[in-house]
Length: 75
Image (cartoon, rainbow, N blue to C red; front, side, top):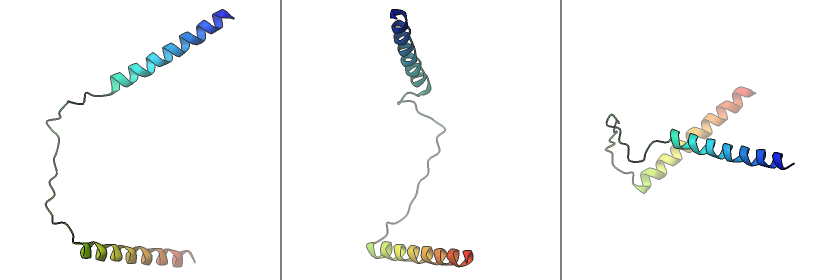
């Protein structure tokens, strides 16, 4: 019975070491810098609250129209 307890402990330690090694080998250092990284610059004005509201209302109307046409096509 004592041998089974030792095998269980050995298995747990081996599994823990395997998981730690996998994690350590797969992650890259935080300070690694990719010089080929592409940068996207977006130059646009922010929407005013009125423009945001109008955009949301238009989106809702479009969604409602799409839902209605989808329901009609199922019938």
